[in-house]
Amino acid sequence: MMMENSLPVRIETEFLNKPRLKFAYPRVAGLRNSRAQRQMNEAIQRLVNQLISETDYDRNQDVDITGTYELKTNERGVLSLAIINYWYSGGAHGMTVVKSLTFNVETGQSYTLAELFKPGSDYVRVISDQVRRQIEQRQIPLLTEYRGIAPNQDYYIADKSLVVYYQLYELAAYVYGILYFPISVYDLQSLINENGPLGNMLY
View 1 (cartoon, one colour):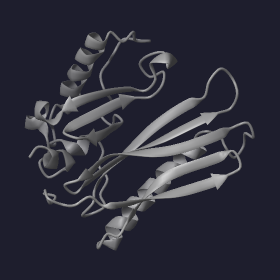
View 2 (tube, helix red, strand yellow; view 1 turned 180 degrees about the vertical axis):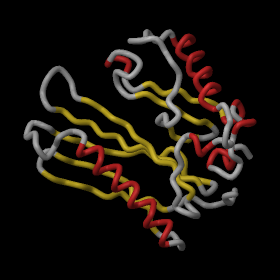
View 3 (spheres, helix red, strand yellow; view 1 turned 90 degrees about the vertical axis):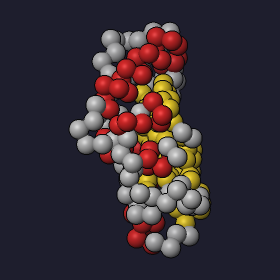
View 4 (cartoon, one colour; view 1 turned 90 degrees about the horizontal axis):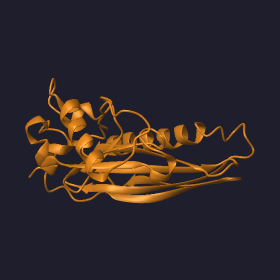
């Protein structure tokens, strides 16, 4: 299990500046475990490169990119962050994509959604039911019938919540933006892998 009383890790901001591209992204610094630090920074860099690549920036001179990030959790040996990429290439409006990474700062391991839960647990159904309930409560008009989360759904950890989210147009019209659904860790307690990041948020 990760150390409950682990201090926040030091985060520095790196800047990628090119024509039509300004991207601020996080870099983990000052860890004793240099291998874990390198592993996390390489994962962050890969994600930033992937987000830029998906905009067709290198081939389309009309693409203009602004990237930034948000720290969601930085405590108890857990680092969860979101990388936000906004780009515009003409038309009525730009596009935003949010992608997240959640790490064990002691080892540098990043976690898929499935790895937050006990093997074989019914986390997909339980989270999907919670999201369905929130869609109804918030009266979000969907573009199509809600069929539940994907096993590898986008997520981050914030406070004592798991936040699953959907990109633009995945569930609703552009005007509704990226849709976030926070779920208390206590509502998932029986499913949680206690040796993973959510396990540290329980106590």
